[in-house]
Length: 171
Image (cartoon, rainbow, N blue to C red; front, side, top):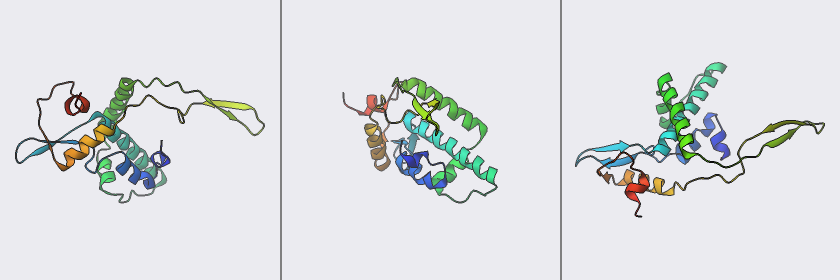
């Protein structure tokens, strides 16, 4: 994970907005008719939106705990602050849980040994960093979404199990 994405301060907001989303939020833009287009969600970006919402909630809790007032941090951040209701957060925890279970990355992560100043082993912790995980290439998702933001995609006969790959990538 890039250190800027681990930064919960507002200094990390730009990295979250630019490295994890397209300029229009990661929606697949579909032409509904000659005059109207609509945004369709993609699971990867939906999960990232949920993580960003939880991150914003943590920021707000931290700010309220210190008594500092939230300032203006750009449109993307402000959009997420207005979504900080409990039911949306509950939805996001459930959505991320289901997404992680569905992806089922089975990479084995060994513990890291932690020693005190006397050289005694005091803890074993697992951070999962530095290991090759079982990931899928998301490049095709980014490409299709970015193209649709420029030129909306024609509506297709959507089916319940459609994916970006099954609809837009030639076999």
